[in-house]
Amino acid sequence: MSVLCDGRNLNAVPADIPLLVRSVNIAKNNISQIKREDFKDLKFLKMLIMYSNRISHVENGSFSDLVALEQLNLAFNKLTSLSDQMFKGLDNLTVLQLENNHISSIGLEISGLKTKVSLYTDDSCFLLKQQLESLHGLLEDLDTFAILSGLKPNYDKCTVLDH
Image (cartoon, rainbow, N blue to C red; front, side, top):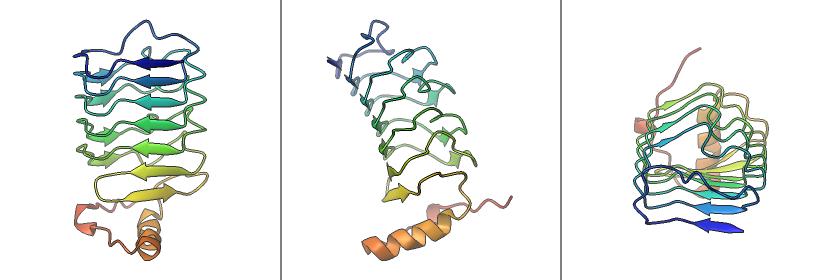
């Protein structure tokens, strides 16, 4: 079962999403925030498409019930930071699309990303290693990615955090 609500000028996530839904497309709307209760009990959802909204804030725990989620598309929004708890519970996530946001802050411990995840950002696609515990060593991963892909990371957009 799929829910298709793309391009309907919605200001919020619809409240009546069926519990057995497998795919939700709420792209191309005017949604500005994701609340903790927006996706509550959607345990069978595998694909959540929310690109081209105005999402600037995602409450911690908003995706925690989405235990089957494999693909999450938050591209073309207004996100500026990724909190430590944003992806908690997304143990089956394999594709995370974040390109064309304004992300300048990433929590040092991104919990929830326990499997291999293809992370799409503005300039590159990164394959996050299994059991990602922190961002320690991310620059080494970027170098490895550059060697494998032939693409050169733009380090001018990177900030090194000492901890």
